[in-house]
Image (tube, rainbow, N blue to C red; front, side):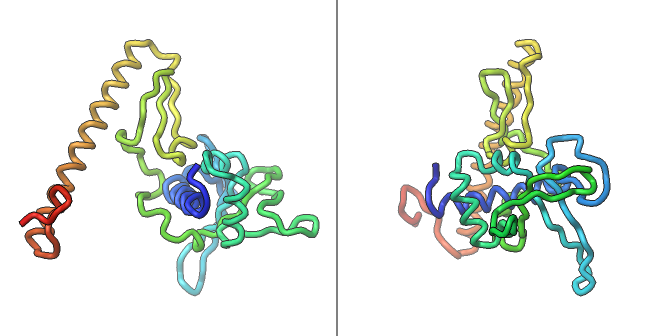
Length: 217
């Protein structure tokens, strides 16, 4: 576990990434529309703000998907801290303030226990997300020996799973080789980009590249 405030920061990052990357495909519309054909994380209410001219979204996590997103963290402690910070909107149930409650969702045709999220209180936890329906880069995918494909990031692992146990061993080995090759290529590209960034800084004169812990003269 990360522990303490570090867990709360990590929880904010994971929730923010889930909303930005998977908000358009894992959350059903609250009042209309069909159910998600993929793994559903919850529901979203949208309304038009006449003052700003923008569409505002309120997200509701189902209990199990939220637990999966926060896997490895102290769930109860983190949820309590997020509620105190307003990220998880407090609800009133049976006269008590709670982190979740049962809502009737028209599009789902049933009642669900949900956690309401205020995106404005998340802060800058979504800097690594690239938008709804983002395709997971192969460099973020790990091939496991049990024949499954998993994602390194807990958020992606909660929604992006591929079971290859039913495929032939030769096909699984080919896929694993391809993933490993792309991962090595991505690592190489990242290294080149870092060198290019250092060169630009040197040319701009804003700072000197560090070599062996000392400024290069």
